[in-house]
Amino acid sequence: MDQVKDADLKSRLHGEMTAALRAHDELRLGTLRMLLAAIQNEEVAGKVQRTLTDDEVLAVLTREGKKRREAAEAFAGAGREELAAKERAEGEIIAAYLPKQLDDVELREIVAEALGESGATEMGPAMRAANAAVAGRAEGGRVAAEVRRQLA
Image 1 (tube, rainbow, N blue to C red):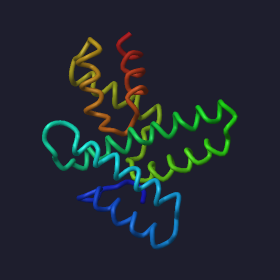
Image 2 (image 1 turned 90 degrees about the horizontal axis):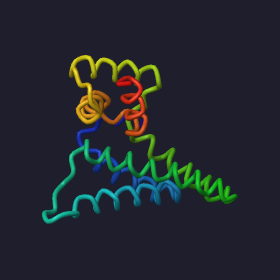
Image 3 (image 1 turned 120 degrees about the vertical axis):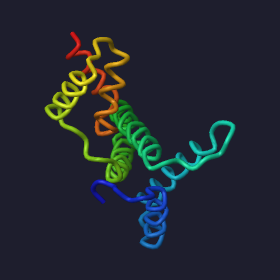
Image 4 (image 1 turned 45 degrees about the vertical axis):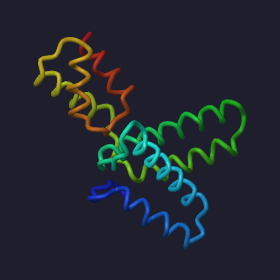
């Protein structure tokens, strides 16, 4: 379950949800149901219902993973360690479906290369170039911080 390169990530999530149901793995089952609900909500949002591409599904999974990290921090800060542990466990399950995240050195190199190729000197165009090069392998906040650092 490392990096997902399936043709249809949503189908894989459905299959693994069924396996979790059979295995009575309540945490995995609940997490996968929550992910599939988030994907379905995204598909029906707007005027026209559509099927998400794998890249769009990955964006939903990334967003849900970020929510789990933030919730875990909030619960831990409020002294609710049992809830923080549950959020962290859900985040680990979600992370298994996401591409490997870039470390700081890799991110620095990719952003430098993207800025060099694009010639961007302002934040907007620089972020577009950097995000295209990073392709979901780093959170937007980390990318923005690195772009700002390199533009300064």
